[in-house]
Length: 471
Image (cartoon, rainbow, N blue to C red; front, top):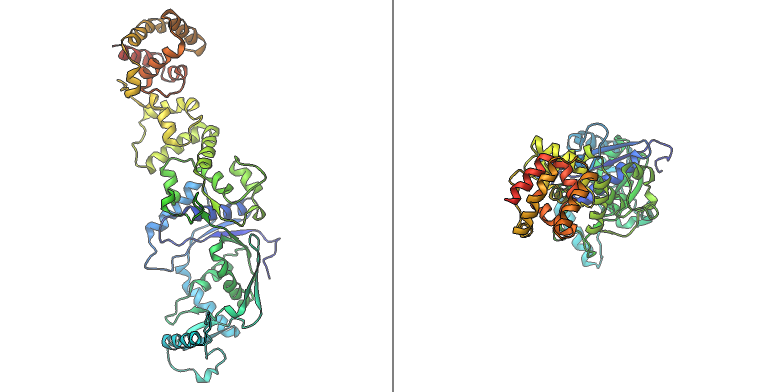
């Protein structure tokens, strides 16, 4: 039986700490978070660290950091699957007592011989049939054993999946899987189900590479008389070329996107839209995503990464962000990317400049390049293109301009006619004047408007920079 729809929603994200948080895992976590948060439910985190050789504290921390950067908060403490191994073993023995599992004493050599015999007989897939399934306990030897679940031998198992639809698996293809090894440690298939049940998980939203596991896990639920959660197996993410996502397509770790300077809100927006749709909506806030997100909007086909769309959405989120929150995230980006931190003066300057540099910047490095004029100290070094604009004639024009700025009211309304009159007096258009002004004020040719730069850095700094450039 499926979990009742009226129950409070509980979702979970259950990564293995054997490496970084993959972007696909980040999207899975996001979908679980959105589904739970949008329904007033709980989003839980479980670290599936039973592979003791490959699981590392560093990988666990990288996963937690990736989730924090994406803004995905979880309820309660993260659960360690390894620490629950005794509980998993307890359930395996409960299955024995219920008659839904049995002790199997078959050796590896016996299992290999069985499969070889089946293959020789022409069987395309040899499902091991243990001779101990219905054996009398009185015949049990004093030898190591595993505990196997009794899988149904006939009929079919049906997975009612919210994304994939009705999935039918023939029970003849399912073996009596091991739930407890001979050393007393649980298998993954058992541990996942026990943990989901004990954590009260109502909806299992995960990658469709786990779809085949659902049939076996559903049998564990049945063997214990537990409610079956709502299944939702989402397609994987592919690269722009339609092939399985790999490092050749670019960044595959969530943390890499922070280091490259993408804003978290833009990344959440993009990943939400990657494989899910709400009408034609492209740009939306996290609050809107929580309200709109549902399982019915998830497509069945693999989603393709589109970096242009990612950059476009990130640019919109940077432009729409509150300045204080944006400044905080920029500082976090600098720390993550191991770039020099802002001095107090640079931070104050950037805070004043954000209004004129956050439009049309798709990433934080682009924004900081636009803000170069307020981050640099005198003397302002001009790059090659800007230096070309500071010829002898241009320097002379700048020298004639500075006296008029000494007494000007420092507003765009008063500065505009002064600069326009200066350009006219020298027989040039304002565009010809703007080039050396940009070079003097920022050392760059691509900058915010000269008026915005002058207003942000102030009268004294403006005049000093123009004086430096004029020689």
